[in-house]
Amino acid sequence: MRARERIACPILAPAKQTECCDTIMQADYSACVFLYYMDTFTEQFIRACKPGGHILDLGAHVGKYSATFADRDFLVTAVDHACDDPGLDGVRWAKADIKEWLPTFSEEVMFDGIFMRNILQFFSAEYATDILFPLLDKHLRTGGVIAIETFYADPAPSFLVPFASYWSAEKLKKQFSAWKVLHSKQYKEEREALKGGRHLFRITDVIVKN
Image 1 (tube, rainbow, N blue to C red):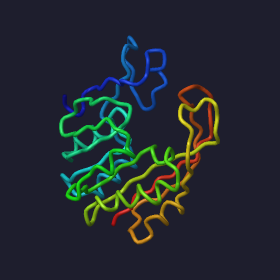
Image 2 (image 1 turned 90 degrees about the horizontal axis):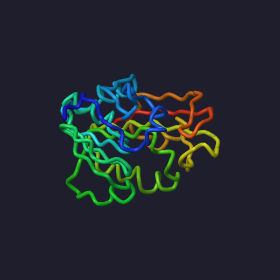
Image 3 (image 1 turned 45 degrees about the horizontal axis):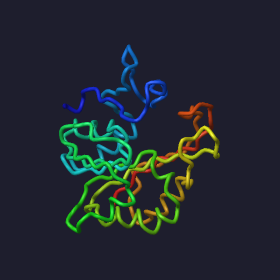
Image 4 (image 1 turned 180 degrees about the vertical axis):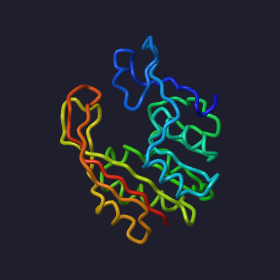
């Protein structure tokens, strides 16, 4: 399967498929699909990475960003605990819990870029600071790039999974204080949760280079 082809979403049941974020629906609503995906945040990350390098996509969901990276001729390793391998060319897929999967890396496994979109908020600040960030640093090559987008909203019954931590841009940049900040943005946006109801989300984007 080529990276630009449509990929069926294995998570949402037909009744929920119209709620899947950033997707294009088939006319018969029999599958939740997406096409080649790009936005400014993703483009900035790609431009900062070594051409043809190895990218780790943490919390890859159905693989829309992994497909974008593969289409740009990167080698991609993608991990998500809920989604099966969509069969994308140039993408090594792991269906696994990130906390259990990351420590299994050998010392030789290195990446040129690490992409984390809408996943950090589900980890506690203690886990991120004491375990996650040091592990990512350990497996990032010199001149490597980490891109993080995280969001937070006040707890609500309509959220599928509760948020464990909130990261402002300043708080996140302090974790990489010796690194070069390529991009930093913090804003608010009203969004609809998968189980219904609109909520005000606090969103943070940070891209850093070691």
